[in-house]
Every structure is written in C-alpha cells, then in structure tokens.
Image 1 (cartoon, rainbow, N blue to C red):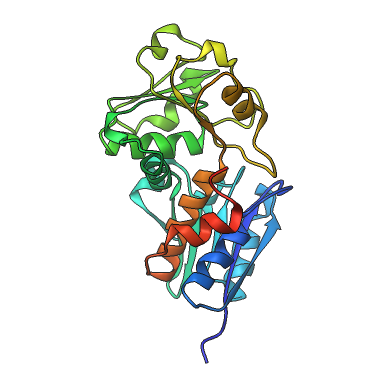
Image 2 (cartoon, rainbow, N blue to C red):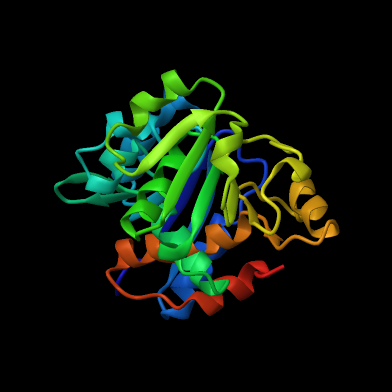
Length: 265
C-alpha cells in the first residue's frame, strides 16, 4: 500500500493560513490519501526545518513570508523563474535533493484569466517590490503584459533584485507617471492600507495579496467605492493548484480547491 502523502506550509508568523485546507482538498480530489500541516518557521530555522521534513519523508512544502527569498540558500536546485525572481514558494523533496520553484506568478495569470482578464493586455502596478512582486512581474512580462511597474520606498536598493526581469520597472513610491493607463493594481506589501484608493488609477482592478478569515479592509474599501477588488485567497487557490501539480506530476482541478476555502468571495 502506498503511504499517505505528507505536505506542509512554512512561514513566520502563521496566524492564519488556508494552505493545508487546499492541500487536503487537492489530494482528496485525486483520490490520494494525505495530510498537511502549518508549521511556524523563523528564517534562522529554515534550513534545519527543511532537512527535518525531508528526513521525515514529506513530499513538499509551500513557503510564505518571510521565507521565499531565504529558501534560495537551502535548496539543491531551483527553477529559472525562482532564480530570476529570487523567490521560492514551492519546495519538493526528491531522492537527489530538494528543489524549489515559484507558482505565485503562474497562479496570478490563472487568477486573472478566471476574472476574464488577459494578462497580455494588462498594465500592472505593483505596490511593493519584494519576492512576491518579482514573481508576479516575471510572469506578467513573460505573458506579454504591455507594462509592469513596481513602487518601492527605496527603488535604488530594490532594483538589484529586479536585474533579471527584463521589461519591468521599479520606481519611487507614488510616482505619478507610473499610474497612467494602469488596469490592475496589486498590493504586494504586508500593509493593511498600502495606498489610498483615490490615489490609484480609476477603474483599475485591485488585488490584495493579503488574506485572512474575512475580506481585507483595503478590498472592502475598494468595493465600497465601486471598484472590482479581491483579496489574496484567489491567488492562494491558484498557486496551490500549481504547487500540487508539481509535487504530484498530475493536473489538479481548481473547483475542489475553490470550494474548500469559499472562493470567490
């Protein structure tokens, strides 16, 4: 009999996460026995934790803040997308070592498609320039997005991490010219209110990568003003689906995952 599959999500803090729910739902949809756990893991303990989980026979783990860039130092090989974005959200344990990939960007493309958006036609403004923003920017540029801009408090310091993402730009936070023609705004910061709704391009879709038990205040405010807006639960669903497909080498339907966490909301 094949032993049950074991998965996990690592981050610090992990006050609220739906990744284990999504992992279980994906496995169940394929008729595969398995379990998943949320394990709080500080950056300083990441290498030790990954080694421990590999020794225990886990198939893989998802990573959340603040571990996505730190993981690069603890893996035997990483995908080209993770190398360019300097971000890993999916780790797999194989006989020949631990590998890393990022499904944030591809998951974001899937999310846009589910909302009736074609990535190649969008102009994207990212509020923040960290690992998640870089993964999304890389995917959008690869999909042919006409413009991808990231706001950074210190664009000179942030730009070093963006050197391999040709076609995206990092500018000073709030730069006026960067707002022109923007069709999608993404909060890629941990801030509850990264920018006033009125300061953002009118008519743009707003996506907050943050999520919790309820819709985030920034999304609630945007909706109250008549904007189309969603929190990070949607991206979580689509990136988890892609992570599961990498671990299991099988396609995973999105509907069982979406139902398990109540997406869309």
